[in-house]
Length: 340
Image 1 (cartoon, rainbow, N blue to C red):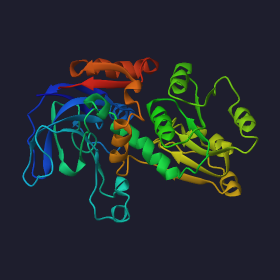
Image 2: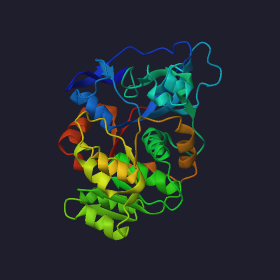
Image 3: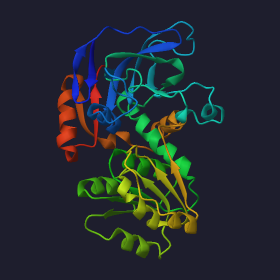
């Protein structure tokens, strides 16, 4: 069968591989759609310290159950499903306190083991989520990025009437925008330096947008909040150099959610943190957010297909990678069609 395989940094191709089998406790899924994520690009660029090559990437995908392994009795052949990529041990400290997404033995489908950019993939049965009627496999392939948004918002603990500011109007910033609106946050500001992204944010319901390249971000926020600052700030731009400004923009008792995996050090002014008693939280992957996001999609409170700029067959994936590398402004979410 065909798969998109990364053999080493900057070395990727379409490959013919052996058909996997459903191992005991696992489910074989015939992949229908898979989304290209920024973390897939990090793997291709050699910027992911956790991956081991060669690797079939892809952690955003949905499909149909093709076979089940021994010991699996709660998933049936033919069911439509999407896959939570987080695999945890269930025994370490994070797992014991209900934080399996930072398990000390964490594995991620598409990073530590082969993922969804192949025609069929075997995954643990516990990571499979059935899809309700009416939720298409294309939309379901995008459940995972929305769980990233749901996770960071939970980590930030929004209160009624809190204002939210989102740095970055890429795919993750837009998913945070949509999930926040679905959860009842009404006042949402989105900042970016690309006007077309800000236009999309407005189309998806941002209260206001700010182009930080052309406007004085701190002055605008001070004016709109009466000098109080922002109670909630989600950093979906993931640029370490922005942290000092984010601290200045936060209100006293504000909460800041960080999503970036960039190893570059950030300047952290302790005075800003202490005088405002800020809460700064990291957010990694998702902590059992698939049921919540599936329900939001099924009830049409989220519009995942609004993020899709390209639908391409698996055979065109190398070209899609080239486009995302050299012309990222032309794309939002690229969805790869693998099967039906």
